Image: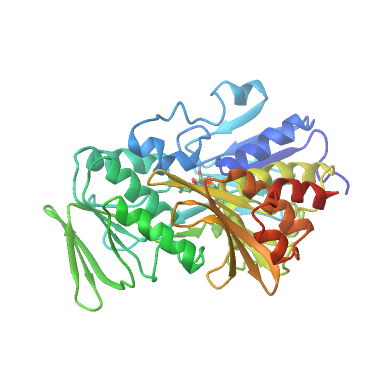
Length: 412
Ligand SMILES: Cc1cc2nc3c(=O)[nH]c(=O)nc-3n(C[C@H](O)[C@H](O)[C@H](O)COP(=O)(O)OP(=O)(O)OC[C@H]3O[C@@H](n4cnc5c(N)ncnc54)[C@H](O)[C@@H]3O)c2cc1C
């Protein structure tokens, strides 16, 4: 690959999340000497979004402590950081973007790192909260600190983390989940049951298979009504029913969209000079074929570093096996690869004791793992998924098998 940008050219990165910030940082550290402009609609400098539902919401951390880099870092490395600025339009033929202040900015390469926005439900009302960015935290924190009754709609990763943080504040918490268990799309049943127990033992009222028909709010509180007539009242609600990728700029320039902005293994979109990374990107599935989009912190970080090298012509096709974690109810749940609800499970350790690694197989092939309390296993499984996906049951289930040693051998 050759560099797709002249040494004195300009790269505009849209989005100051971890993907965009890492792209800008890596472009500079890998020797790009031209202009880098990092544009983001949030008013904060790049920060750790994962803290939004954890340390920031609990009040144990604050925005300066979760900054990815100190404020002076960006001018120090000569990255022009435009916070509080939205890219409102792109002209891919003229290679310009239009900013919310009306300014036009030319580019040689454009990187879309626009992440996504939470799906909404119910009216726009101060008692109904969503949680994606730091700006969403203060109002919800006030409710938690006041120990209000909280209804969480959605038992996915963010809903579960909010429920956990709210219980730490002694709020009465009810979680409504549309599926049969929390994190049902991500986790096979046996592991999902462990998560259900985590909720219950923390005192969360968990209702599954709930289809909400209305969510209403007034000055006194909120009421949620299910399609089957069940009702729940609380002081406030958090709607955590997933996010929609922010694809509008890509759509405007006619880029191929399929659940996100489709890119190749170099993060190139179908439009010349335009790349996409992070939560917004639909990327090739190197291990299983096809394409997928993932919403993991480490993947967004990896994409940011990889796209920079790809632009500069020093990279390699991207095929990293993803991994992520979630902190809830005192447990650190780690996930590698692409586990699915219907996978065959091989469990190492003790599910009920919350000390296990559950290996997930599909069509005889290792595709993922979920673990509590065994982070080393997750590192090893990522290697096995890539290099030894057909390792036998006998080896995988043998308690004497050291997954780290096995993965080291597989890598050679
Ligand atoms: C509350 C919460 C907790 C999480 N916890 C975990 C966790 O524990 N573990 C884990 O692995 N993952 C977690 N995630 C997921 C992880 O944070 C994301 O996968 C990651 O932050 C995605 O990074 P990104 O840079 O692709 O997108 P984002 O972080 O969403 O950044 C995109 C940025 O682009 C900006 N933007 C969008 N459009 C424009 C525009 N037109 N002009 C200018 N700016 C624009 C947005 O405002 C935003 O700042 C969590 C996510 C949330 C919301």
